[in-house]
Image (tube, rainbow, N blue to C red; front, top):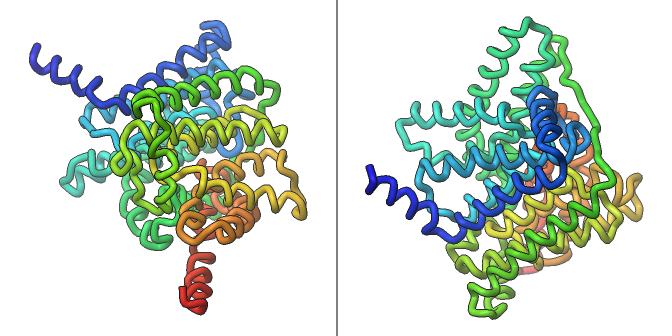
Length: 423
C-alpha cells in the first residue's frame, strides 16, 4: 500500500507540465473565493448546474464570477483526475484538453452535464475492448455537447424522472458515437482544423437539433454576456500567463532560445510541441500566446468575461498543440479585416469570440502562408455567425464546426492554385 501511494505521488509530481496544469487548476479555485464570498460562490455554483447552457450563456452573468471560476475549477479537476487515474504522460494534447475543460466551464460546461458524455466514451472503449486512455482526449473534448444533457434535464416537456433519464441517455449516446465520427472528420479536413472534435460535435448537434425540431421541440437560445470585469480578469490572466512565461524562461536556462524556432511548425495536427520542443519552450509559447490574446481583447475594447476567457484559455492550451504567434496572427487579422466592411464590429459579442477561436485554422497560415491565413480568418468570421443555427447552440465548439466547413471549401482551392503556380 505504501509503495503504491509513493508511486502515485511520484507520478503526480514527476511531470513538470502536470504540475503546471495542477497549479492552473488551483488558481481557478483560489480566484473564485477572492472574487466572491463562499456563500455566493456555492449558491451560484448550484445555479449553474441547474441552468440551460447553450450558446451564449456566460456563467459570470448567470451566477457571478466566483461561481463561474469555481465551476471551471471543478470541471478541470474532473479531467485532471482522469489523467491521473489513467496515468497519462502529459503531452500537448493533454494540456489542450484540460485547458478547454477549464475555459468552457466558464460558459457552457458544468460539473454535471459532462459526466454522461465521459461515461459514454468509456462505454465505447469497453465495447471496442480497448483502454480508456486511447479515447480520453475525445472524451474530454467531447464534453462540448454538455448543453444537450442540460437541455434534456431542464427543458424537455416531460416529468422530472423522465427528463433525467433522457439527459443521461443522451449524454451516453453522444459519448458512444463521438469516437468513430471524430476519426472520420479528421480525414475530411486533413488536420488543418485544430478543433476536430468541434467539427464532429457540430455534426452530432445538427442531428440532435433536426430530430428535436421534427417532433416539435426547439432548444432554447440565450445571450448572457457579462461586462465590467476587465480589470480583475486582466490581472488574473496577466499573472497566470506571465508566470508561465517566467517559469519557462527559468527552466530554459534564462534564455528565450528555441521560442522562435517553434514557429517552424505549421501547426497541422498532430503538432505536439511538448514532444517536439520540450517543456520549457512550450510553456513560454503558451504564456506568450495567452498574453497576446489578452492584449488583443483589451486593445479592441472587448469584454473579458466567461466566453472570451474561454477563448483565451483555448489559445493558451493549444499553445502546446499547434498554435504560435506566427500562425495565429494572420487568422485573427482576417477577422479584424472583416469588421471594416461587414455588418458587425470587432466588439460584437460573437465576433469577439470568433477572433479568438478562429485560430483553429492556424495550420492553414502555418502551411500556406500569411495571405491564406488572412483569407481563412475572413471567411471563418462569416461562416461562424451562421452555423450556430444548425445545432441550436448545443455545440459549444461552434467555431470548431465552422472551421471544419471552411477547411472543406478552402483547402481544395489552395491546393489547386498552388499546383497551377507550380508550388
